[in-house]
Amino acid sequence: MRALGLTTSWPVGSVAAGVLLPDGTAHTTGDVDEVFHIASISKMFVGWAALIACEECVVALDQPMGQPGCTLRHLLAHAGGYAFDGPSTITRPGVRRIYSNSGIELVADELSLAAGMPFAEYLEEAVLQPLGMRRTSLRSSPAHGMYSTVDDLLAFARELRAPQLLGAESALAHRSVQFPTLAGLVPGIGRFDPCPWGLGSELRGTKQPHWTGTHNSPDTFGHFGAAGTLLWVDPGARVACIALTDRRFDDWSAEALQYWPQLADAVLAEAAA
Image (cartoon, rainbow, N blue to C red):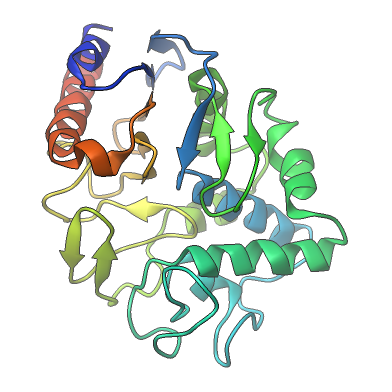
């Protein structure tokens, strides 16, 4: 796929990328087996694992979790009122979209208690093993501590696009706006009102500027990571895109916010041709 050639101009030491097309074929560039830190893309896996746990009746989306009035749903949607890091709360649940590693870590802790096993083990058994993601691992915080490859993330993208581990209702909830009126911040991108978010995935909505392309549909969902990584799925176009690098987003954010949308638009244009 010619669009993937755009990644060769990125100011990074190493990059690998992949695209999943509507017919199910995948195109890649770079070493698809190179292991990268995927950072906050990890949150998508926490959301998927939590929804599997809901279907298994281990937990429930609207069960109390965390501070008074807070639920699992609030935490996955960054609506629990928790600070970015640490156990402190900033506001009551459902008031503002506050991007929070702490909230996602709380989900993993509570799921671990309910399932009677470490979260990493539950994630392995519920998601990674069934999808054949053999080179993917959780090494630290569930909110940002996963490592993976393009090849493994293509398997996850296939699952996101055509779920086999989740029922249709749960999969739709993952990529549907939760608490739709909330304003909030997408770290490194800007403040938005409203700031739509699903259950572990960010939703593009009408955010502008954004790290996805100008031609991505509002229903596009996914995540980028501070490690310089991204994964998005556009349900309307039935296209998914992954790009992994070895340079932190903070070090080249101004450039990334030009390169990443350019890649997305080129991928969508070529897929539609």
